[in-house]
Every structure is written in structure tokens, then in C-alpha cells.
Image (cartoon, rainbow, N blue to C red; front, top):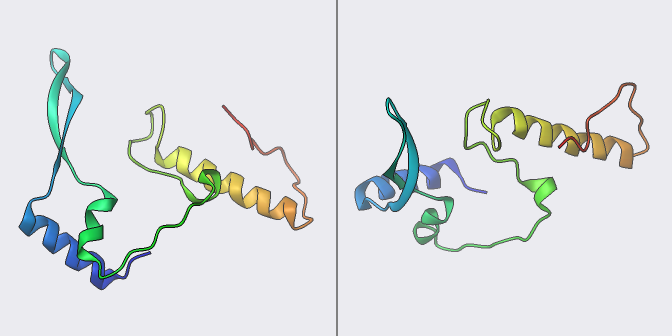
Length: 109
């Protein structure tokens, strides 16, 4: 969890410090896919700007619904994140003794 003030500090710091990770990736082009380099930043790049940090180990299916790609990709899309949150909320309802009035794709492939 971060405060907005801290995130602004991190954004300004990362921009000023130019901290990037170089990743070799397939890049679509008019000639098909070609290999290229991409500059990336990650959540852990914020840690040096924090006065303290704490990490928690959590169940992935309860705490992690990434959005890294556009809908239509194979994984980590807005639609897949929405489905993961839907499944979590469905499990909460069932665990609390509730029931569902329609079929829910809890374990879709």
C-alpha cells in the first residue's frame, strides 16, 4: 500500500534518476515480429524511496490480478483481472453461506 504523496515522490524520483531495466522482447512491426529492447520499471523500484518497507506473503489467487496486456492477449488482461476478482467475490459469498442463482465459471481454463 502506498500513499499518493509517496507515489508522486517515487514518480519524480524515478524520472529524475532514470532507473530502467533493459528487457529484450518481441516487437510487432510491418515485417512481422522482430527482437528489440524495451525499458521497463517495476514496483520494487519504489522501495529505495521508502523510509521503511514491509512485505507480506499472500495467496496469489486472493491478492493478485495483474493487468499488463490489452484484452485479446492470452493473459494478464483487464478481462482476466475482472474474472479473478469475480471468482474471489464468489468464493467469499459461498464461504459466508450464500448461494448463487446462476452458473459461475469459477475454474475456467
